[in-house]
Amino acid sequence: RQELIFLSNNATTAQTEGEGCVLDESMAEVRAAGDFGNRPLFVLAGSTPFRPPGPQYAKATEALNDYWFHELQPRLAALSTRGHLIIEEHAERPDTVIAAVRNVVTEVRAEQQRR
Image (cartoon, rainbow, N blue to C red; front, side, top):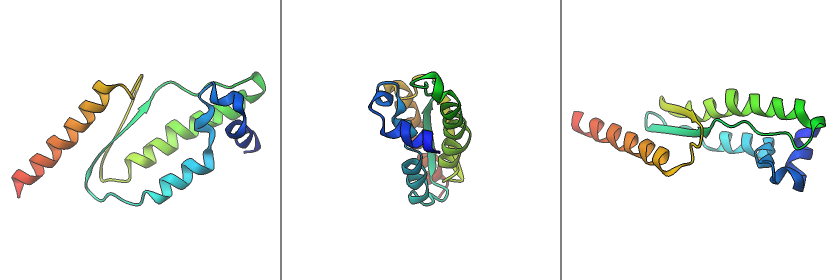
């Protein structure tokens, strides 16, 4: 935990994607998000693991990656009973985001037609 706190406050980690190391902040955001009921939700997450800024942080970074990909992201998707988790390389690219938005729109339209 101390190493993760160090990583989140170390300027070097910002250069190596260490901004994801703000564990407490990430956990608080998940808790504050509440529940989306049965609204369609697509959570996009990049598949590239965080890199340790140095060999001494390899274990802490591995723990962060495990938490990030196996706990945090699935929890976000589980905020809706219709949540989907999409983990892929470059999930932030416009085509991936557009596809997720289209999926949400398609699900909402299909639901409205059933009414």
